[in-house]
Amino acid sequence: MTRITAAKPQAALGFIGGSGLYRMSALSGAREVLVKTPYGAPSGPIIMGKIGGTPCAFLARHGQDHVFLPSEINYRANIYALKSLGVERLIGVAAVGSLKEELAPKRFVFPDQLVDETKGRPSTFFGGGVVAHVAFAHPFCAAQSELLARAASELGLDFSRGGTYVCMEGPQFSTRAESDYHRRQGYDVIGMTAAQEAKLAREAEICYSLMAMVTDYDCWKEDDEVTSDKVMATLSANAQNAQKILQAGVGALAARARDCACQHALAGALVTDARKIKAAADKRLALIAGKYLQGKK
Image (spheres, rainbow, N blue to C red):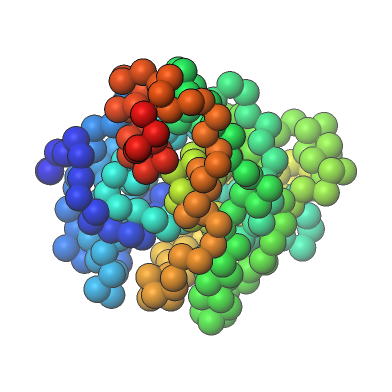
C-alpha cells in the first residue's frame, strides 16, 4: 500500500461511495493509497485505478467495512485527500429516503438543491484565524449532474433530474413527524452525508454532484416503514446500477472542459488579510487556497 503526505496529480475524476458501494469493480489496475492530511485521516485508503483508460480515484465514505456513522466521517480529510491527488470532478453516491410518491425505491435522483439540518459537523476548511465565505446558492455542479443523468437515461434506468436533498444528522431514521414536516417543505429526498461533502468540495474548487439512490419511502408512507434490512436489500441492486452509470459517464466527464463557476469558488471569498494569516494556517490551507494567498503577504 502506498503512503503519501503530498501528491502529484494522479486523477482528475473521483468518486465517493456510500452505503452499499464500498468498491468499484470497474477500476482496472487498482491500488490503495493512504493520504496524510492536516485534518486527520480520511475514511480509508483512496483506491486509484482506471476506467476505460481514464485515471480515477475512489473512496468509501463510511470506510471499506462501513465503520463510521454519518456524524463520525472526517469529511474534511476525505475532500482534502482527494484534492491532493488531483481530483477536480467528484461524484458522491449516497442512499436516500424518498419524500415523494413518484420517487420510488431503486430510482436515481440527481438533485440540484440542498438543505443542511446537521448539527455542528465541521463543514469548512477555514477558521483558526482565516475567514472565507464561498457562494453556495447552487450546491451541486449542474453541468456535471446533467452528464450523469444523461448516462442514466442512455442505460434505460429510472431517474429524476433536479430536486432538493435534505441532510439530517442521523444515525436514527426520521420520526413520522419529521418525515411529514420535510414533505410539507417540498423536499424530495433525505440523507445523512451530502451536505458536508458539497460544502467542502465547493471550498476546494472541486465540481461536486450527488447521485442519490432511493432505497425507501422514509417513514411517511403507511405500512411501509423504513428498516435497515429493507435499505440494504434495495442497495444491492442500486449499487450495481450506480457503477454502470459511473462507468458509462466517465468518458463524457473526463472530456468536458471545466467552464463552470466551481473552479473559481474561492475568488473573492477570502476575507482575512493574507498578511495577518499565521504560518501554521498558511501551511494548512496551501492546497486549498494557496493560489489566492501567494503574492499577498
